[in-house]
Image (cartoon, rainbow, N blue to C red; front, side, top):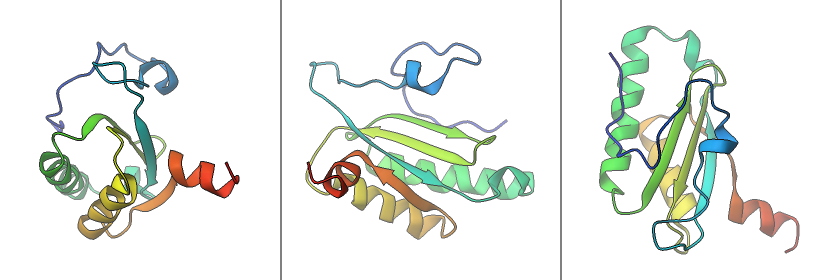
Length: 120
């Protein structure tokens, strides 16, 4: 069985929409930031290759254990969602670390980048 070893931030419900599960604040009430990465065709890859991707992503999460608060890898959508404690450049840094280990992974958007592109 494939599993990531992150501590659950809240109980998960089957088929619960991601927007209901993603935390927006940490345990001290401070806002979190997040980013998404697309891994094209991941769900069509052989099981061994998917497991290798899980291990590579887990290695990044282990390195950033104090930063990562929530992560969801949705095989149906080929999408990795990561919520982190904010610090300057952390979303781009972590996305680059995932990209280094999983070259097919593409940064879709980070909250900070999206706001910056809107001129906010």
